Length: 321
Image 1 (cartoon, rainbow, N blue to C red):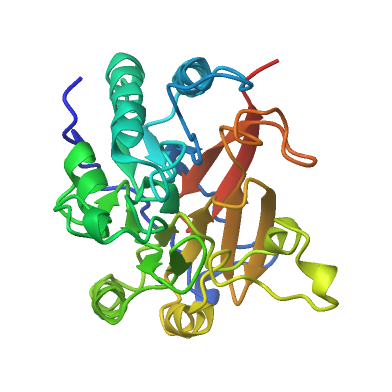
Image 2 (cartoon, rainbow, N blue to C red):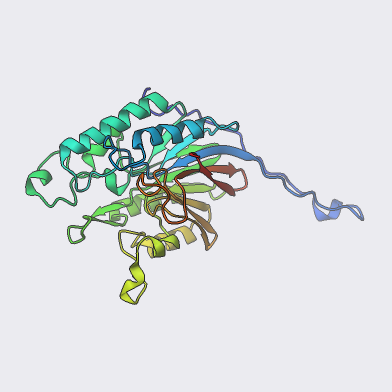
């Protein structure tokens, strides 16, 4: 399959209904309620963690293929696939030969299965070598995000696009942090944050915005992602949720067209609305990294319906029985 995007522009959607002026209403007349209209259906597939190694795992290659087939096989088919990051099992702390084998598995299944327009955001496990702390690895031209961007033929790790009357912003949640065990924290660097502000400034106030990130900007399930309460305090890791969530929240508050944020990373599911923005953390295709369900949640993806009034409906879909 051609890896380049092949989106068709959808225009002329979401025309507003106007109510008659009050002075023209006859006695007993009531204004007609506005009816929202769905303009786009997307399948959000995050945290696939595919690997060519299958020992003690529930067939990651077969699971990736099954999830994509299930999503595209819906009677009410998605118009768009949103891949939410952590496409491969791990690149942060894995030797390069094994990383390349994982990407070869991804490429093979992706080319065979994906028949729908798609967009991708990066996950922490897609970044090469940050956790290795090896000067020789850091000297590799493909160190960090260079390898994944090359494999996925992406010009930038963050970008935006318009589709079906919505504006979509795809963020890069990942900043190198050599002081952390995993080598990263969830934060927009200053250049990306400035870009995000300019992008939202340029988006008309009447155009609803969906933000796609790998790490949640805001979620509650992060409190159960590990036993972080064991210290006697709730300490949310800077790698578990955006450490700069406050300034992102403040930016969104100044741009009321931001309606929904989609994320993964935690392999758990929640739905949090804060200051008018709905934050949806949509689990993981891999569940517990291909070892069954993760806590209370089965391996799954989400179907997200976008409406012309700026609302969304989110349905979690278990694709394996």
